[in-house]
Image (cartoon, rainbow, N blue to C red; front, side, top):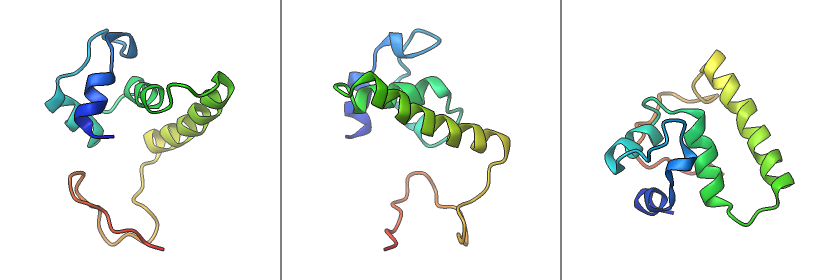
Length: 94
């Protein structure tokens, strides 16, 4: 899903501030600049709209564990030489 398509599917109810960020701001948020938990939940809601609520709960529980860990002790990915910019494509390692 493109960022533009994500933006079109978001609603004010997804956000604590009760307003959808502008497209440019959404791009910055997705790049990690001021990312909030409400956007994480909104993306999960938009990407899995027909998922059963128990599966959504499990998915958000896993995401919340990663979120909490990133908030308390952010570290670069293991073995990374340098961090990639958010707008650069990342190589796939198999």
